[in-house]
Image 1 (tube, rainbow, N blue to C red):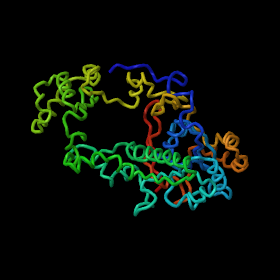
Image 2: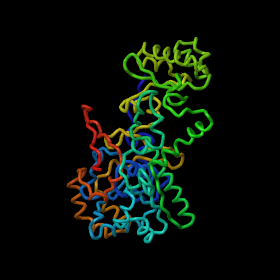
Image 3: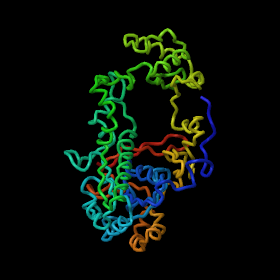
Image 4: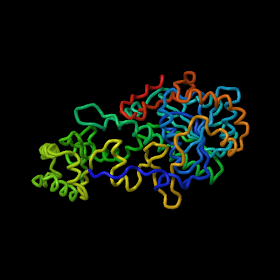
Length: 437
């Protein structure tokens, strides 16, 4: 594979510095949590919103190293203890000035803390109150703990992923937490914000990972109903059951991804691979086992990058499978500045892109409590300074510490899966322990 230069630095291309984005002027209040809530707030910040994160004294029991947690970029932080006598009041002061609030507590916890939708809407009827959970605000499992994999399992989606005859494959936490969770929460709060600005009425957005993941499988359910999908792994066009839509090992242990579905792409794939005798096997399922064996044998004869060079510039729909560290140097991604370097961290640039109001990485991971003075000034809340001085100091003393709230009242009571710490130079990083469930 041909490599490109390293990711661009701030001010050296799209994605860093510069304009605030299309959500400039929108105020977002994030009640600290882990996983999909912080990622959703980061996305809103990437698009230009003024995101204020309310951190708790001592930090959260399970979280990535705060120095490298890029889900906290483009934010400011204040530290408030919601269990202190005036903690809820300070949060309500912020909610009164916000357009959107994002929280990820278990159902009922925000109400017990005095910052639920009713209390917030009494102060700000236009507020969009976004609730991020795994199971949703109601239903038999609403109060149960869980993690990304727990929510994928009952939706039928986890059962689709993997090889026939083997257990389902865990898709990291991208499919549940961030696709079914964060992206649906962001879609929901922005739609509700549009309604609030048109009518003056805020509302509650109930974003459940199980709902979002199920919604993502809409096409598959249609195919299942139409007899075009078999309800088992590794037996379908898009799940690895097709020999020209899958991943193959190369001589060096690397892998090549093949997606040559259409006849013209399939024909080009066979020509470049050197297997023209299988041209009539495109829709002949009886020949698929032999085709798969032949394709696997061919790919095993050369290294990954050698095969990438063979297919480069073609419409065979073949690509090398890159590692996280390799991806920023892929020529296409480098040319688009899909990854950027900010605060010494190589990270994905904001997406999607806007022709008039591009998003940007304006700040690195926020330090707990570091934005108190600015927020008090910009949001016209002088009481925030007086009410948070002690908490601010405590937050710095325990920044990133494993220190939770009482059972049933902590944000990480909800669910999110393990998140790996950023790799040290020797790449022997260890996974974080799970939340104390």
